[in-house]
Amino acid sequence: IAVIEVGLGGRLDSTNIITPLLSIITNISDDHKQILGETLPEIALEKAGIIKKNVPVVVSMTQPEIVQIFQEKASNFKAEIYFADKKYKVLKSTVNSNYQKIEIEETESKIHKTINLDLLGTYQMYNVLGVLQAVEILKELNFKLLESAVNFGLESVCKSTGLLGRWQKLNENPLVICDTGHNSAGILEVVKNINLQKYKKLHIVIGFVKDKDIDNILKLLPIDAMYYFCNADIPRALDAEKLYLLASEFGFNGKYYDSVNNAFIEAKKQANIEDFIFVGGSTFVVADFLKYLQNEING
Image 1 (cartoon, rainbow, N blue to C red):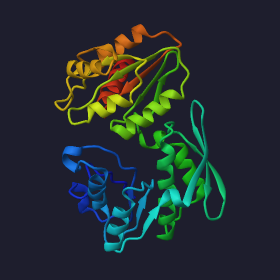
Image 2 (cartoon, rainbow, N blue to C red; image 1 turned 180 degrees about the horizontal axis):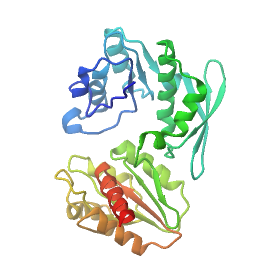
Image 3 (cartoon, rainbow, N blue to C red; image 1 turned 90 degrees about the horizontal axis):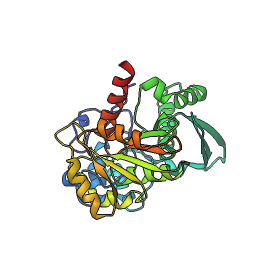
């Protein structure tokens, strides 16, 4: 089995040369608007480009304003479509230091199941429903997938795949967490998760790429934090000083730094053991940060 992630959009993405066993579409948000379209329906139409003739498609999260787009595309291609959050419902989610425990109900049978997931971000509650629906389809395609194997896989996603940067905890005192959420929907979920933490003062090391809707993202971020604006070491990165000036117009407090490393080093200097340091805004910022930590470990 190969899990192939679409790079950008879907309709014109290079992964479209593949005819898969099934396709999965997660939640749709405003992202890459200059390429995919200005509105959610326009973006959804591009994402729907991965739907193939007679290939089942799973939509993890029902979004009323774009449901019809997926249904029409699936109908035109005679592709069976499944909305995972119609089949399953999350009843409760609790998080400890190592796992997120998610209680799920199958809506028709009312059967309950509990999943331990080693991905801690609460937004994974949406994604896991798509996974469960995909597993059911694979079973119908005669793949032997024991429930115990599925549970084991969900408990050890990071260990099995080496996945990094998804609400990843890196230190306890002070609490240090990074996350690669980088569009409006991702940042909204990041803020929800920040609000669930206990801390005395919040420090945010943050940077973006140039093509993001920065104004809308800044409106979502907590104002009562100390910010360390930075840019990743890539050409697409938004200059840290420009980000600082934009953020200043929204009333954010902070300074700008010439690298992710220097921004984090300063945040760590300023934080005490009861504080919380969050690193994110861009996948590239998180990548630079994790590379810096690895270099520190390796000496």
